[in-house]
Image (cartoon, rainbow, N blue to C red):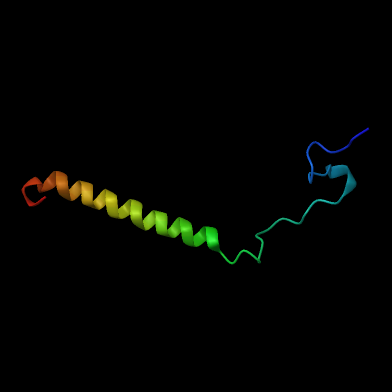
Length: 58
């Protein structure tokens, strides 16, 4: 009988789950990508509001 749902996924009853927390080996790549996306989204939103308020300048 197979106890695994998928390869690499272990049942909680076995006690071999990985510890909670961020993986320090990744170095915050996801955080940097999210910050860049946030800055771009805010920039586009400000541009669109400015274009609506002052259409003759665009």
